[in-house]
Length: 290
Image (cartoon, rainbow, N blue to C red; front, side, top):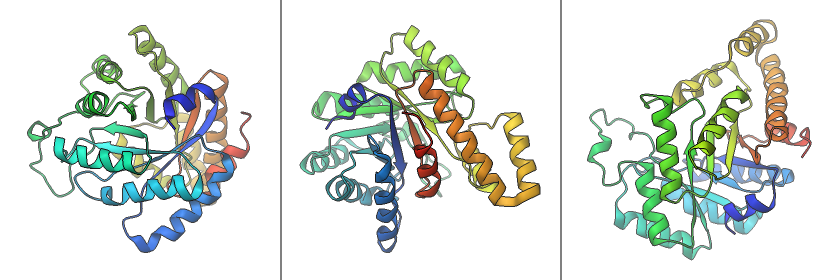
């Protein structure tokens, strides 16, 4: 079923993000996590897609099994990196044949180890190009895009980032899922500015429960998001006094409060970044009033 239709009929909701394990011998453990998180009744789950190869070959099979065996509607990530019209046609035809109807179109990151990589050399340079391609050629697929409440790290300004996201909607994106953030004011301001530009599609906020300070800082370094000063100080104090266990407890409390405030403020739902682990998301989901 189209996620854009599900969102319209089932607000508010919880959704999830998973990344496919690189090795197939890790799949049984991965699907154990998927089955545990099914208890939250997620409206959908996004399945990430390796840039320029990576885990992309596993994405279709994992998404198919997620829907067939676990009853969770998947959104398949699809990046412009390394893409060609022929490759996209093959992938999207396979998607349709498997009964999968939802894609999150992204530009993606440069392939690892290619220091001279240039996005300008790509047939599809931007996520907007992929969105337009899918919307024009595959009307049976509901396509969404990414949004950045703190703006994309490579954007020269917040306005230019908003312009690009607005273009995604104009090219056919039916919904948006945000990068993780920790200050809800950023989200609500971002959505208001998009609405003022005419981008009237659901914007689903991404929430990351911090479970370990070291891994959180690593993830934040990759995506460009920032931890508010008071929260960072509290995490560092918790880490000094109680280690990972204290950080985990604080991170879960913060994520529950953040997610509830988003829902109470009118967000269509919350998109939990699972990191392929069940416990934290189960604790968050079961403490939300939805």
